[in-house]
Length: 228
Image 1 (tube, rainbow, N blue to C red):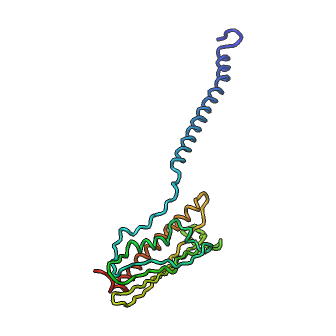
Image 2: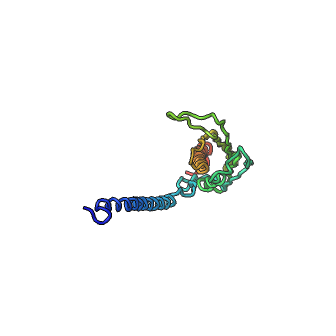
Image 3: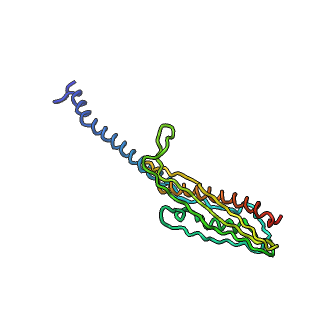
């Protein structure tokens, strides 16, 4: 059918030619708005789920039993002279190792006698960092995992006590080769956090080993002084 200058079919084609791109544009605009909305939501969720600040694991000996000694006084002395320069890194640990050893003495060893003095002297407590060559590493399944550094801890303590009979007992506590490996950072990884977490594990392992070894020494070498 023909009306005026253009047929009905011609007018329909002109209508579609004009409004179809507009509909497509509006559809794309709606899609863009949805994408922006999802992007904003993702940013909010990411911010809400961002890693929390690193918190070291507290070193606590309060759950351990107290070792009662038949002495008048228990003393702790720290005679370590550690450098605060590389390769020594114990002063960078997220927990104070020296304070933790002193806390062990305060919490786990109690004076229950009227005579004699027990002295626990910390002679060495160090953690040494050794940087590894860039081509060293180890193979884990199909991938070579590069190692950035290795860490070795050493602890040396002298324990002395006088008995009620005025005799002297002396023993030593030695720990060494508590080794840990720090892998090279991966792309997008939090390298500083990984290092703190590794040092936190080292502190836990070292103090736990000291706790076990020191208890063995006191209960064996100083058995005559233990209050049953």
